Length: 212
Image (cartoon, rainbow, N blue to C red; front, side):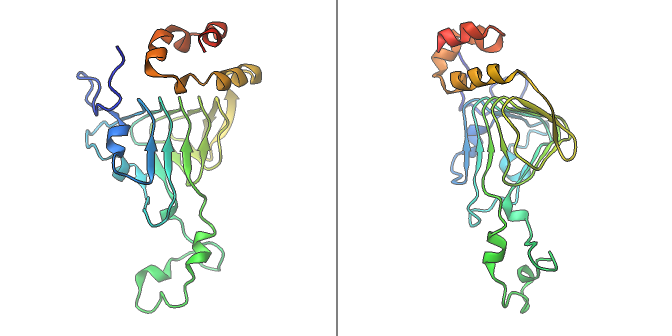
């Protein structure tokens, strides 16, 4: 029987493993899929406050984490609330300090530079202490290497490394990736995933397509 995706700590012997969906309850600007987890090594239970930075309701950007995402310890997801306007000569946020400096500031100059939602697709693996810059989209099945700084979108099933993160290869050829995206096993009901688990974690694409 599959584990309960709404159980905060699904592994009694490994309390650091934390399902994120229960932590996201009540957060209007966050959506988390089934079974996505974080390695909460310090067992603080505050992923969305400690690891998701500058995420403010008034900004309006959303963090979307798909199903079956694995997030290693120390990953940081930076949201638009931490960005500074860059259209003028200075990036210093004079207006936030008040004292008259807020006069004449046009919020639209900052809003126009916001990069939108951050979207982590299903079945993504994000390595230790990787950093995500606001507004990136990470495609299904991608792998983000430890310490990578992701400043642009990542293609499905790509492996990216470095700062700034660059694609070093794709896990499968284009035809196989297209077939995997069409299958989209992560959207299946849990019971169907249970029945076809060996095909999902194996390498028999024909069997996986037959199960669809």
